[in-house]
Length: 265
Ligand code: ADP
Image (cartoon, rainbow, N blue to C red):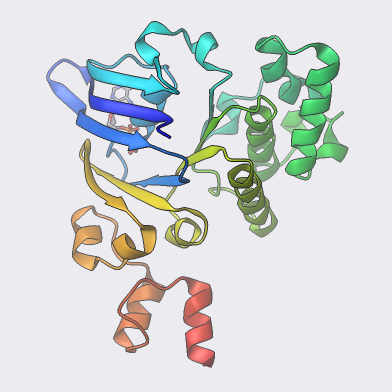
């Protein structure tokens, strides 16, 4: 089933300077990572999906509904976006209030909103911090609070902008677990991300944006094995994969864990 349909989508912040140049893509249920060098248009693209920017050309449908005819508030129950910087999102004085805000805002009654918020906080391992001021948490924890805020609204589509940046090891493991749970629940999970190992291990589809166009779209391991393509997109091959190739261990993409296993074997 198509959850998001994007047709000939173009966007300019300034007249004559197209940041997205006519993108056509369908998103089904497959978890999808959007990668590309800085300035390639990733954040602009997800803001358009969320209805925070208006296309200069083209159309977006979310679950069959035209985004152009919906307010951001009307879209909120269907699609959630977690910003890269938690300070752009957090504004309440307790963690619980912060996570309850989304469900309350879409009309969930306070008792249910609290249950959903506590459940989401449990999922990110922060239920015990519910009474604290989010500003007292670490950056890693604040990012998890922002993820919980969106999870608590139970949208069909969740977009995470760089969820693993500024995460410590435990935080990254939590993000991986949360994404796994959301996938099990049948949600469409999309992320903007730079960590190729994380993509190869957790996502079913990768889209490379390059200068406002789609340069590649497909299976992450297949795409990450195409050195010339990655170099054209300004991404390069991770050191560990390059090392695996030069040692003749493989010709395809290797995550760090796979590289270590191949050295032992
Ligand atoms: P990415 O997320 O891939 O780094 P962005 O979507 O943030 O890319 O940016 C794409 C292009 O749009 C860049 O050239 C950036 O400088 C420009 N841009 C982003 N936001 C704005 C803005 N608010 N006003 C003007 N230009 C912007």
